[in-house]
Structures are given as C-alpha cells and as structure tokens.
Image (cartoon, rainbow, N blue to C red):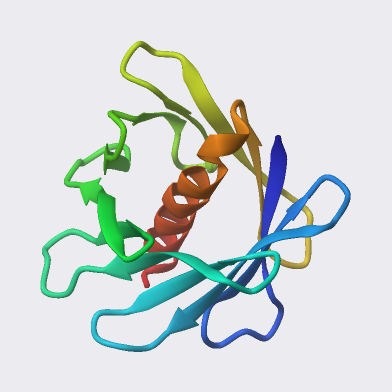
Length: 155
C-alpha cells in the first residue's frame, strides 16, 4: 500500500491529508493546541480512530501513540551528536536509514521491512511517501511518520 502525507497549505494548526495512489483520502489529521499538544487522526469517513500526543516537559521530543483511547506506544528522539535517531516503542519496530534527507525504513525485530518512507522534492509543500508492506500497519506507520515530521518541524 502506498500512502502520501501532505500538509495542507496555509495550515496554522497542523492539518494533514493522507491519500492513496488514486488521491483518495484515507486518513486526515488535525492538530489541537491543548496541553499536551494533540493530533487527532480520523478515517476517510471522519471518525476519530487514533491520536498522537506530545509529552510535555521532556528533554527530548516524545510523542505517544493512541488507538481507541488506549496508549499503544511512543516515538522519542534520542540524544546523538552526528546523526538524528528515534526510538520507537511499538510492536518492537525500529527505524533505519538516512534521517537527514527523510529517507528511511521501519523494520520489525527480525529486520523485515514494515514500511519505507521518503520525501518528495520539488513540491510546493512537504509530501512524504510511505510504502507499507501490510495494509493493517498503515495507521501505526502514519503515526510514526507524523511524530518524526513534527519533531523535525520543532513542534
């Protein structure tokens, strides 16, 4: 399954559309400026299905993943000197790749690829492409990709 994350132009609150290869909306994301900062993820019908919540008062950016109101994991930036790294606490997943250019892959504990993520260049707005091996992992891959994008934007 191939999905694209596109930030809406002129969005002050962090609104994103997640579309498939046919430009059909699969998920939508709406940022809420609450404490802690929250991003609601809805399905194509507009039903809230997941959230991403920023942890307040942490040295390194941390985002908690929620599905159905239940915390399922987190994404945290690690302290490094040469290359940005992220820790995923969800399904045993790990991130590998070149974080500076936003090209990387998410792998399971055995090293099997869950998804590859890359940034399209020469676009008016940021577009990230996610090639996801199993459709059932799509929501969690979107949550992980959103957390890393937010950290890169300093949110």
